[in-house]
Image (cartoon, rainbow, N blue to C red):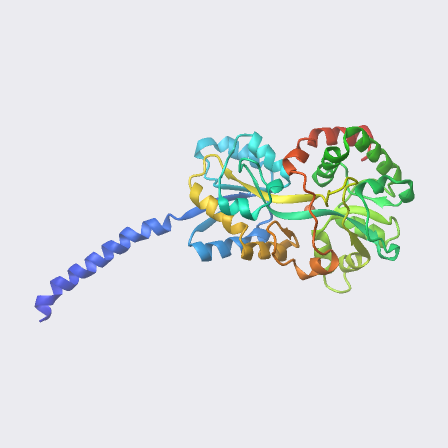
Length: 347
Ligand SMILES: [Fe+2]
């Protein structure tokens, strides 16, 4: 009996094996290469969720500096499929540097508001960080316009990091877009006159210096509030976070909102796995991924209806994002930087 059946069995096995061999390389080839300037720990949970769901392996290349130069130097042989970074200015540099390509995707267009992506699908915001005002708790300040920070009321009471930091040049660009360059220059002069100390350090230092009584109000990003307030009880960071109240400023003109920085991504011009890059982008704006973003770095989801991190929900709450297109705001980057120098904000 075995004599008769053995050849058949061997044949069947060989056939099954050939199917496996045929199937394996195709599956193993499903991959996507991500170049990111974001800290790997921040994106790792998102990427493993993507791989688990899609079966697509993600090769992550952490590029601390010189993302554009690197991709440009690699040229057509670049393995990069998706380029991820922070700040719309950096994304537009990639677009203008010729290392991206446009993507048309209904999923991306419906998930990301039009003002937070390139008009031709050149770049997409994936998460938001609000440029807010930290205020001393006892002031009981509940609302403020960015323009108010130049008012004599705050003389010697304002703290901020350097004007030339991308977070602040982006805010000044937005002000140029809203109020024009002349009013923005006046505002910068007023802000300079109101500084409690040199415009230097980081955003957390604003909270530290409010608690230390050096300033009453200051400009800083929203996610640091999450980091500080979630720190261990008794630590300095926790004390700084607990010593402030957060105000969400808008600009003076009606219908404006709070200025946001973004994290975002573009599909690389020579992406070897273009379809997988689009799949990864679409995953990153899906509901579960957007909720992960909120938890990983206390950022605001770009997609509507996604729950905020509880610490952010409690201390800052929902955001009314400035409706001006980030592309328009980014046009004034150079002018903003020149004005900041002209008034000597960082001197
Ligand atoms: Fe930051």
